[in-house]
Amino acid sequence: MFMFADHKGQHLNTLRNFLSTFLTPLVYIADLPGELAFWSGDRIRSRDELFEENQSLKDEVFILRTQLQKLVSLKAENAQLRNLLGTEQKVEGRRLVAEIINVARDPFVHEILLNKGTNHGVFLGQAVLDAYGVMGQVSQVSMLTSRVLLITDPRHAIPVRVERSGERSVALGDGQLDNVTLQYVRNTADIEVGDLLLSSGIGERFPDGYPVATVTDVTRDPGAPYAKVTAATEAHLARTGQVILIWPDQELDLTTEEPAELSEQSRSQESHSQNASQQTSDNNGGGGL
Amino acid sequence: MNPGIRNNYWVIVLSFAVAMLLDILPLPAFLLPYWPEWVAMTLLYWVVALPQRVGIMTAWVVGLFVDALQGSVLGLHALSLSVMTYFALVLYQRVRLFPRWKQSLVIAMLIGIYMLLALILKSLTVTVEKQFSYWIPMLISGAIWTWIFILLRDIRRQFRVN
Image 1: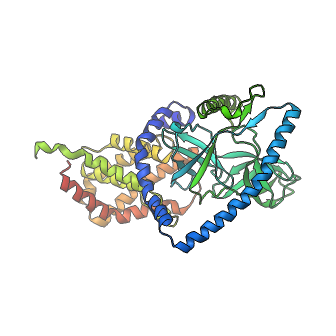
Image 2 (image 1 turned 90 degrees about the horizontal axis):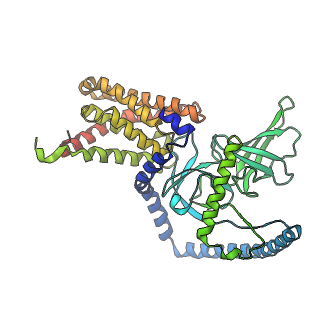
Image 3 (image 1 turned 90 degrees about the vertical axis):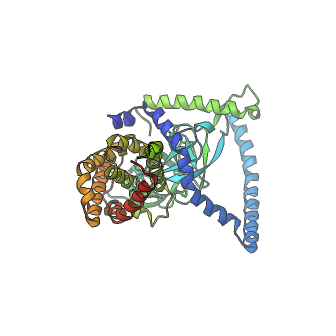
């Protein structure tokens, strides 16, 4: 009874939220040894190593800077084109860096626990990225922590498109870390090993255009209706320690010309309301992905 | 008994907290499949030692906390631990008299029942793969039961929990 109520309905969310919040200190304590190892790894280092790292970081910053120059002009151009077309400009949504404080021990689920919760404005279904690609989405939130379902969990599916050809598909987790499989890919679809899969933004759960995975294997069996495609995730699911929570991009109204004036507060509120509408639309659509 | 000591229930609560802590401790991958079921073992010790205090209701509440910690469906571990505790309550008088190795066997069996139930319930919501490594913690738990037993017994005597 109890389990059914939790699985099918949202009635027990408050109880879960309460229990999770109550147990938060335990999670933090459990994280301490690892944290200590990181800390000592950071502090106890030879001078040469630090020099070397500093140099390589400087080089990386330089390269990224040069790439950024191009981006600025591209952004301006994009805005101009959008103006010409008369469509809304998009303002980048809020971003928040969170740390992974625990990983699910259950071998059958792929979940991680983050150190940000409703107190920081995290909401159910929020997209989570790392530096390399999409990681997953928030599946449970308490006041100070949130649980993230990774894209490799068998319960998870994410709409994707092939960067090269634009073919659309849905990437399902298959229970192996660092691996997803594509569903319903026609045998004739233009998809090859090495293709990059981007999130397609369909379903409005994940933002458009973030790298998800790289195709590693395509098996076309003429007898089977669909090709078998597996892909390796771009995000370093098993190795990263920090992730980024992103809020949906804001549609900017062109009549009010104050994109920078939007305070953090109102932004997060707006994203909340957006999310709420998203949730309801999902429910109408017979359960989103 | 000294009436001023008031049973020291907090020792039981603390032991469960430590067990849960061990349960969610981030581990290196090679240790992961061998990590014993700390919460279930602690629960079994208290059931065998103080069946009049720790029973199915305790098991249920502890299970609920485990569910919240692991993010599983609320009630999954609660139900599994409760059923395990029921069998432990049926068996506790015999378990107390068994020699150590036989105790370990019974404990491993009880934990096996708990893990089997948890697996069945899990398979309703999550895709579960058949693999032998799932059962290794059961064997490990049985193997280290003797030491857990001695440790918790000494703690119980030290703080006069009853």
